[in-house]
Amino acid sequence: MNVVSYRPGEQDLAYTFGGRPPVGTVRPGDILELYTEDCFGGRVRSVEDLPSRVCEFPYLNPVTGPFRVEGAEPGDTLALHFVAIEPARDWAVSTTFPHFGALTGTHTTAMLQPPLEEIVWRYDVDADKGVVRYHARRSDFTVELPLDPMHGTVGVAPGASEARMTITPDAHGGNMDTPELRAGVTVYFGVNVEGAMFALGDGHARQGHGEVCGTAVEAAMNTVVAVELIKGVVTPWPRLEDDGHLMSTGSARPLEDAYRISQHDLVTWTSALTGLDTMDAYQLVSQAGQAPVGNVCDTNYTMVAKLPKDILGGPAVYESAHDRLRALGRRYLSER
Image 1 (cartoon, one colour):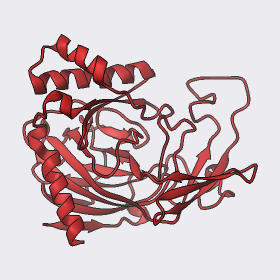
Image 2 (tube, one colour):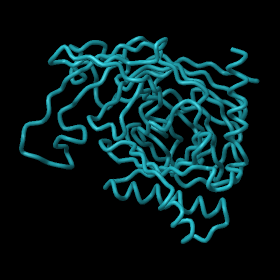
Image 3 (tube, helix red, strand yellow):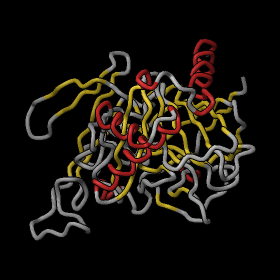
């Protein structure tokens, strides 16, 4: 087992997918241990630290990477299995912003009423107990919520020499903000450039579906990823697999188009895996599928289409990459 460790300095963080040289090279079968900063780069540390004062646009939502994958070429699929996602600090933050979020006027939804206030909430992260503690700002109300670490942002370089801000989700991945992307999940990306050039960040101690206020419980993370490459297999949109489900994503505006993309991908994927006629797959997904929401506040919105694997008869997905990577991850954890 080859284990690669990488901890970026502040100057090493990336703010785009594409347009940057790799920080390192990994090979299929490698385990990668990473540190990722929160979406504010660690600058928002108390309720007095308003992002508009301590952060500088566009230096928000940093990612760790990119990493070049040896042998990756356009037309391949990169598989990343999240072995572990663990909060790196005992605190995390969330905020509201003027002109950002699902329930306020934005630059694309212009409203005459005043923008929402900029407010910071600081959460206690109790990893031993498995909770995060919410503290209301305008009363003494507190409540413990289950710790559910995930990564909001992960992706590869887009094609055609394009560079995309990390806040934007699209076919290359990016800031999809789906709570489905937790430890134990394998995510698949179509490779667009030589080396794939993947990066990840934007750790969330937990997040509700939709990320309605525009931020989750934003946290720095210590993350372990297992890497594999499936040669000659094209993946049109990021796909996820856990032990029980297959998932397709779609990112676009308006939200119904993100929904359509994810459902279309899941229907056609189901058809390809089972040999079902497209219309039969359409009917099956319509009756057995779920539709978790990713984000409804970014430059593109994200939807997820989700289907139990057992109803498909257990087809081999991506040459059984998830099973192999899960086994590799368990071996890593047992030897750590």
